[in-house]
Image 1 (cartoon, rainbow, N blue to C red):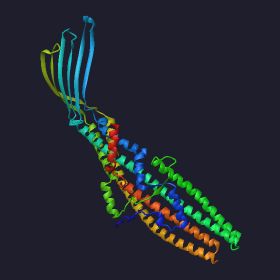
Image 2 (cartoon, rainbow, N blue to C red):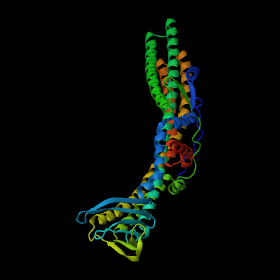
Image 3 (tube, helix red, strand yellow):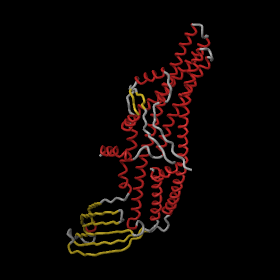
Image 4 (cartoon, helix red, strand yellow):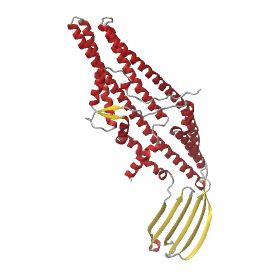
Length: 481
């Protein structure tokens, strides 16, 4: 059974969703004039360029290009020079001895070449002797023709790719946090407007009740009931102001704003729409997402590790060939030339460490395959439940709209009924409270809906793509170099 994604309608301001009274709209206007507007898009732009958390995440990328140099055998041309002075006490003479050599390893083939030149006096004769030699060694069992090194090269490539994906994942996770912070700030801002509007509405009611008391229309107990209602709304307003200030401080930290700057949120529609079939889209997610790309690369890496550990079980056998010229004096006079070839063998007869490493690598490979399977089922359940939550919030938002409209209508009717003495003051106050409750409820579901959408995009790797980070990575790399 296919489960379609919810269609996400464009976000709209909460002012158009809530039927605020004139006092509430005046309160909103006062709040607008109290600070400068900070749109969602401007906030994200400022946060991603100003918040050093993002740079701290991305800077790990700069180390990745050095991983092969760190982990693969060195391919440098090595120059070695040895100079010593020899003293022959029994012959009462001394002589310098010099050796100069060049060597190089070709890691991807395992080939080692070396050339050296040596000059010095022998033990039995004071005449200087010299020699030049060229040697080649090629492994044919362990690391045969560089096989183990090539496996390591592939492993390092996979590790680098995994790290690159994980950097994007970390960037995306933090971006989701600051987006969620903006939605929470917006929710707290709207709650503050509702709280101010409610306080002002109840304050007006209190003024009206005092006037009715003067005219002997209302009893003192009625005035006290409304006064208690106003105090309750004032208490809640203080809490809402503190909650909003906390959220604002988080926003100001993200954009690195100064403490005296004041902002108000301006929410647009950054998320667009999601639509389609759950099963098909989840299948696409498993095929092209970073999450499953990482899992596939980790499986490949563990398989390559098994092959590399198996290679280490082989004996170290090398084909060796060389050519040497030996003679007298520095210019190798009266030289003797000879060529040699052979085998070099080194085989630990009971290497328990290497054998244990091979067995462990097989276990790790099996564990990685199980991790992929379990992650598949975990994400399927998580995303399916997240879909249900998004669908639930859509339905609850629609219900909240209807409840606000009804509560507003009831409040107007109860106001008129109370003025004619048809209902009690308690009924009138209850109508106020019902409208407030539904306003707060609507605001919560709107914010929760947006937060769930962000979580959906984060889990499905749609919030950030690597191509979006490339320009900044290039800028950071140029700055370092």
